[in-house]
Amino acid sequence: MSGTVPNNLVWKRNEIESPCVQICVIHPETRLCTGCARSIDEIGAWSRMSPEARSAIMAELPDRKPAPMTRRGGRSARLKR
Image (cartoon, rainbow, N blue to C red):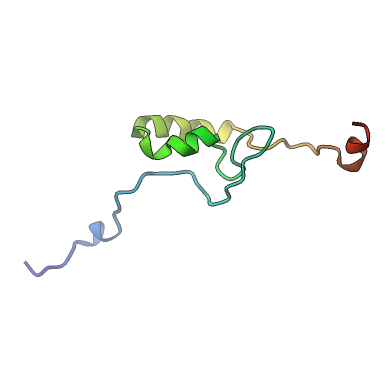
């Protein structure tokens, strides 16, 4: 053997697939990460989940709304409190 690694194995890594986009902010109302749309519990348990459980969550993520799309009202909403 010459000691070389086949090209198809050079970049193969044994890492857990994750939807994380490194914008980790939990929205106070939805309790979801505004970057990946996972809940704080899902993020905390991610490395211990089975591949099937992670795949199921990843399939749900496109339908989740991590943050409300409407404005909260700004100054006028605060004055009404």
